[in-house]
Length: 109
Image (cartoon, rainbow, N blue to C red; front, side, top):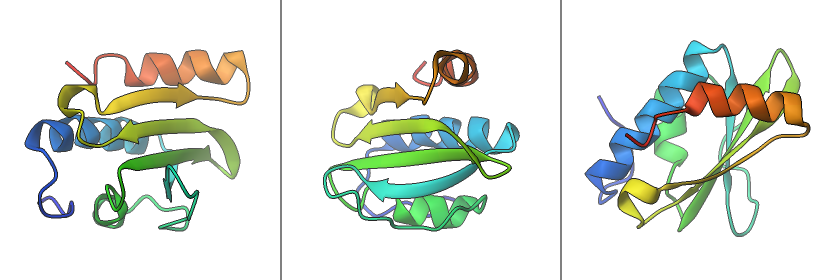
């Protein structure tokens, strides 16, 4: 069952669900933030429903990713772009970026 805000594009929800699933399957916790204001919408969580509810509150969403308390990087989502919702991937170093790129490879397919 999806808990995304009403009106979120179905193509976007499919891609975002793939991102959430990949992160949770890799034992990552997610903190949801507003892209423009940086406002934090959730504490670190692995609860899919909480993550979905906090997604797309504004035009952009950031998923900060953490594993065992260590920040791994961030996924940037820009809403209203359909299949291009997955806008950017950021990490504190190249090794973590390589891991995240492999983890999220193909989520937009």
